[in-house]
Image (cartoon, rainbow, N blue to C red; front, side, top):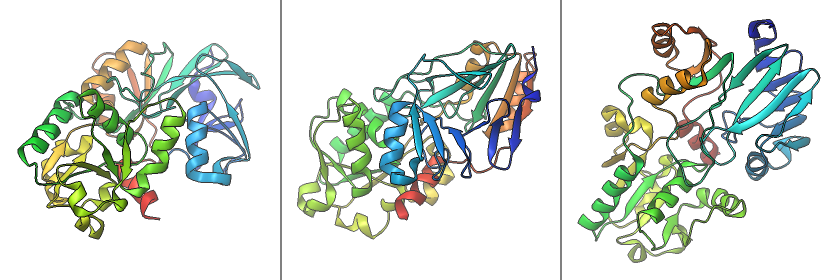
Length: 343
């Protein structure tokens, strides 16, 4: 077996598979890219050829238009292709619609790149499928023991309890446009909220892509078309950057909420003026990260963006070799998505 560090390189553009001649989630335009999901810190514009899941390509076209890749190749779950001498296939990552793990085999060595992922069930996307491998490349966004996410239904119940408690106020929930918005809608529907859900205009087009991909979201309306009186007692979803700016003045005495794993950090919630922090994350928490490392059975784990050292230390205590890749250009979606919406 040829060790992975003999054929996978970290270059300025990102993670490069040398025998395949392709990058995974490159941060700069390249000739050949495999994209794990359509968030702006992973799906950059300007690549010549792009391979991704069909839903990711649809989302990239919506967000990037002609810059989504000159040539686009969809790859279905479990479909295997050969790229030069490398076998490649995709498996669901459970992060957002279309999000994928990239599995590669070369000279007897199997490497799985997780992309961003979560292990909690999500009605808007396919769930994470563990892939046994020799090297597992994992994110580490919430790789500290303090980050243990509560059940999302519990947080949705808190939101609905607040709506019932303050029927004369508008509840505005900050959430990024791709993934979190649609997941909140689906969770609210599952909890019995069958009334209209109002949207900031920046969230509408991605919701339309989700529905075109077979994810029903129910009655959605643009908040910009409503009078202040129409929004009393309602739930409004908006980018986190909009919930406390001039746009929110149209709302009736708003209760400001933000849905994010970072709402576990009280100081972050307080600094953003959040009255109702909702700990709902699309990333694996500390327990899920460690359980996933154990489940895939890889003797070696490479850790990308996030709290790398803590996860490497915890893996080493279980006899798993760890390595920090220190890839740059990836970060907190809440901030990355805000940047897109403010452009």
